[in-house]
Length: 219
Image (cartoon, rainbow, N blue to C red):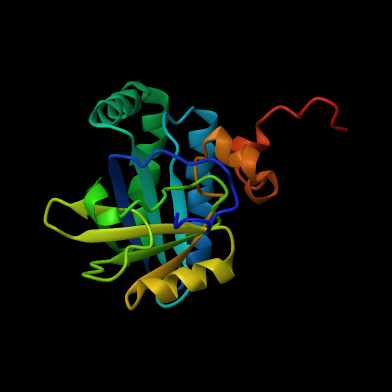
């Protein structure tokens, strides 16, 4: 999301709220977690999850999975929460699947953050075309390489995106110590149609992308 990092001409609106969920996986559970998340992704695609979200996985150190869910406004956040509650078939699938995830993780944190334009210095929020994210927590006085989001207790997250690993490494070097490079996991995410359209090869493992009708003229 730093200027010029993602190869797309679309400038996206910075969300007012960003819900960040982090799961630290138990050693040796990667394969089981992968299969379980694939079940959740399939249920969300089949039963019409009401809002896009991104799954990200750490590239180094203990395995962490991050989930990003962005809301343009309080009104949208309220509407989406109500839509989840009213989708009884989806929730009937997600509740037990979510409970079973406890066997695979050893830590779980959920943080609702609010956009801080005064600290972000005009940096760009961009998900379309992104394959990697660089997130720096509590960046202090360092340069903001992406939009800054802040929790109610003052914890700050600088969130930048990149379309390749080399660009992500460059952003992480600028962001300084504490930066985490995370790879987008298309197979676990619930993508917006714009994300799929911008990078169809990348998203082809996702059940939402697989369920799209073939484009006219394709064989």
